[in-house]
Image (cartoon, rainbow, N blue to C red):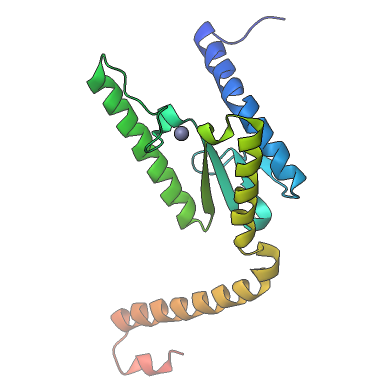
Length: 183
Ligand SMILES: [Zn+2]
């Protein structure tokens, strides 16, 4: 079968596949699954394409490489001695992008957790990390349980703000004497 991808595209795709399915990440996933948490992988349409998505808990998890994403205080997050400016700029961009992605997700009501790759270096460490992560995820409210209450609250809130806006719009257009009819 013909290869439709240019060598550059091919290698980009291979790099993606590798980074998505690294052994440490797979260990983490298996442990989380064992702990009863159900996730979706690389769900489309979310800012930053989180590695793991837990829809029930409205939670996303990123598994970050310590070098590229600059794990603070981690020895893996060193800066190369040559072309230092180039690397510093690159790292700054990565960190800024991560912050933007997190803000966008938080604004959409997602809980965001980051797992650093150095915490997954051995199976033992990965299992420990999975346990603390599972506890953190479970601490976030189960969305099915809060949905009905939360939904009613949001509906009421929306109605109130729509009324307020309507009031403002009418107030601008209609002379004061007529605005008495507006509910
Ligand atoms: Zn690290």
